Length: 394
Image (cartoon, rainbow, N blue to C red):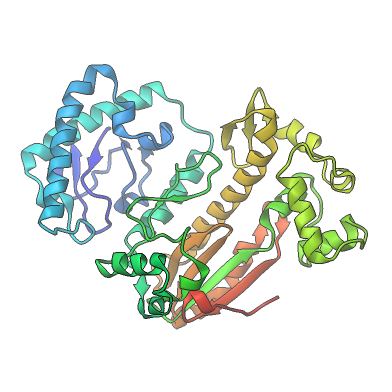
């Protein structure tokens, strides 16, 4: 049965079913537009994932466009009025702010658009991974960052620091990601997100834990290890760039030069680097994962690609999906705990850890390091702000 939710926050349970609104999730509902936090343990299909993150505007069929345009215009007007009145929808339930008559009309047309999507789009092969990722990201969406802006004053000679200080002084900050933002699965941030991807390293110490300490788990050269894994090669226990210096490049290069040379080969599919090509057979990898102009990684993500980009897309998407899978698994380990995943950046996740949960840290480390490609070497850093994390393993 089709239904719609009227908010995505865990404490804002309200659903539209058969023309009525309910303060619960009826047991017989099965399909809706998008995920909400209070649906995490329900078996629901989501139209937004079927259409790979397209908006309602983008997928609305022609025969519904006039009705949707009218309802959508009213929705935008309500949201503008909330903003003008300084009503924070992060702290309030949307359905408490809008008239019931509008909510009924809005949900009815969303039902029809959702039904059309299910009829006209195929279920993505990586549906489960996307849904699991959305569950983690929606939890992050409402986890307020604990910011101490004082360290920014040291950099007030920089316009970027002054602008960031003013922006962050005006309200609360949250890390809000878009799982559909990049074809390779790399997470992008929403316009209203804290700028975690572009935050200068010098400014990172403004982020402090809400609990007791920040713990960062980061893969050692994840993309290089993915290449090894796709060839069923054993993962070296040491730093992979040192491994390349000693073995791949026969001791002719130091670690830093080996790193530069390897990535120059990895990101250039036309590279004729003999030593790199001998160890890492691109053609063999692509023969298993690139067919009819589409890359398909081991997580069933499909990406249209030309010959030049196919290998890069395969490695980048596999690495991204590996991190997303691990992030979801660790999120589940922390469910109903005080600790939580605060944010993710590139190939790392950062946990806001409470002392009472410290007995979980070894389990979390094991989960993160043990991958589909074998055990990856990881770095573990911890500290009382994100800019001054200290390495606690090597």
